[in-house]
Image (cartoon, rainbow over all chains, first blue to last red; front, side, top):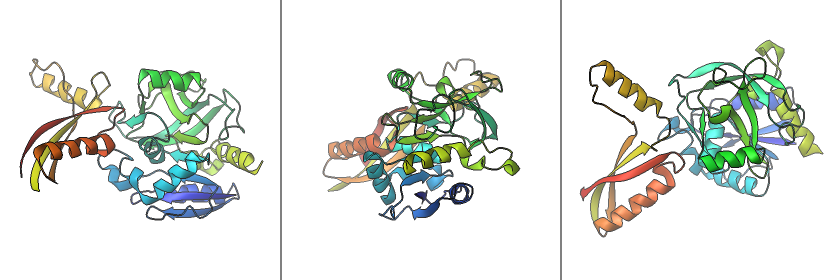
Length: 230
Length: 85
């Protein structure tokens, strides 16, 4: 079981993702440079957080055309799992691996803080170690996290059960106050229609040890492992 | 083949929340410009393009907008001008 972690110029969370999957998860991992054309046999691709290409033009817009992304898109088209975290979520949307777009936070502020996520479905290859309605404590760190999509697209996401995580309060209620960026319907993470691509703004790879304040993010990676090994 | 300078306006789609535009409108209101009904903040891109004709330059810039310069989910673009560069 091997993770491939894509590194663009400006990526800065690749080390966190690497430590997460090789540490507590005990999997192997390889970093994939954006100019490479080879996924080096990786089973699962992680597009980590950061500011690829300085967020020039739009967050993720230029990274999407990197050589390695053509391989990632082919991997996803063949049903291979891809996890886009934060900037990786933005890149996955720009690459049309996921619908919608991430816009500037409604507050115009960069938000770096722990949030509560509600698991909306455990019936995915990324959340099978959680249960529906479970609350997770996971940090966010972004300035462009406002998930936006047209009305038809939003309806499709909801009807197909593609909304995986929502921002909620400590009691699990989805409220405006619990929404850190103005995302439509408090959406924090979605999967593709086929279920093999996950995008989320929060950082589960930073919630893997009690020392870091939470271990709630580990279940996401354990879910992937359970599914891929099965 | 000639060189053309093509300018493109890219703005957040009307109806979508544009917090930057709202902040600008609020600041203008605070300065007393109460006539401002709406503000949207986008990007202005100026491209020097080699093409056989101005129509050819425009066509290639539209393709660039569709593919990279504007996000079809959230933004609209319009060609602001084309001149000999």
